[in-house]
Image 1: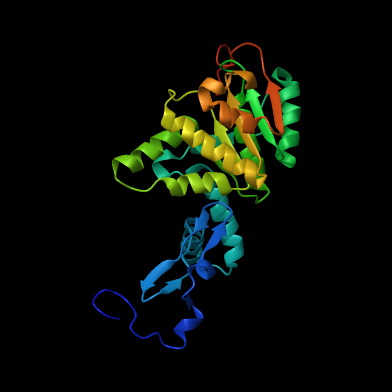
Image 2 (image 1 turned 120 degrees about the horizontal axis):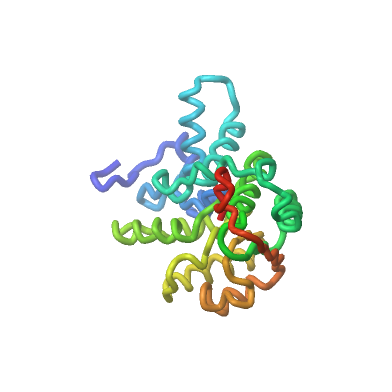
Amino acid sequence: MNRAGAFTHVPNWARRFLSQDPAEKTWTCATCGEITPFHFGQGWYARRRCACEQRAEELRQRQGVARTLGQVLTEAQRAQTYRWLGASWAAHELEEKTFTNFERHRQPAAFDRTRDFAFNPQGNLLLYGTFGLGKTHLLAAVANLRRAAGRPCLFASAVTLFDAIQERVSNDEDYQGLIKQAIQTPLLLLDDPDKPKWSAFREEIYYQLIDGRTRRGLPLAMTSNYAPAELDHVIGGAARSRLMMGIIPIPMSGSDYRFGVPSGDYS
């Protein structure tokens, strides 16, 4: 290897792991999205591990037990559900929100339709209504049911998503990787897209997410204080138009759970 870090000669044994075609070493993780290869110079590329694989290998080494990489990888993908934006943005408290501990009698129709979606996610589910009805709880219940079944999915509060993006922008870091993850994950759960203040930048991000997933035929689940017809001023008309393709609107109404229900951490 020369001073620039490029391979001037590649041993025959190493050529099994390298390629001069970057596409051969590019792959897609169900949780992390597209993973581009390492470039070693002189036109040689190698497969790069995603965050799931790195975490899986760390867990396997730390635990020191005979388990397959596939088994540990499944666990690592489950762990990514709430921490894919970064450890500081993880919402671990949502891991306890399930259909079992949701008070079904308060929202029976929304409960049943959301649980049906959780077992077979298709289309764009939208839970909407005023504050304190249990929308976030039901959304997290979908994520946790999928995690329990070993199915990768990503959950994010819209506020947290844009905070994580802004942090990367401030640090002069690329944030498009997060967008790719959100577009490519088998199921994306987005809580409260109406909470962040509107901006052209945020509207563009919503469009990228919804359009990208629509073109791939991937399901999306969201919560909002606004009905579908009122979302233009939140996510933009183009994104709402795509959201309406296969939409499953689930209205919720009633009193705020936070009043008179001490244990009800609902939203």
